[in-house]
Length: 54
Image (cartoon, rainbow, N blue to C red; front, side, top):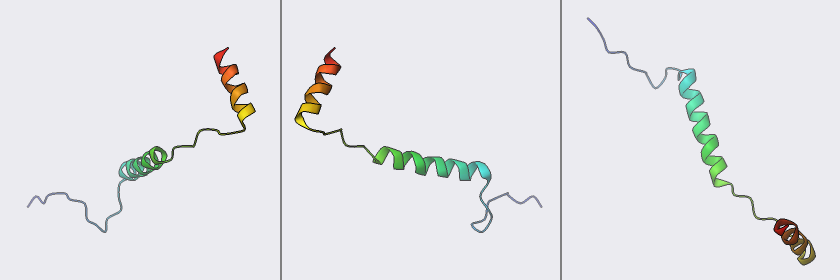
């Protein structure tokens, strides 16, 4: 009798599944973290703005 091959909850996940899950978690964590723009002093900001303008 041919039984359907199904993965048990106790069975270890395949390496590709593990990799995919890890990648998904990493990408979601990366998307959540948005670094704050550099503040600095007024003079530094002005210098940066001038440098960006050039």
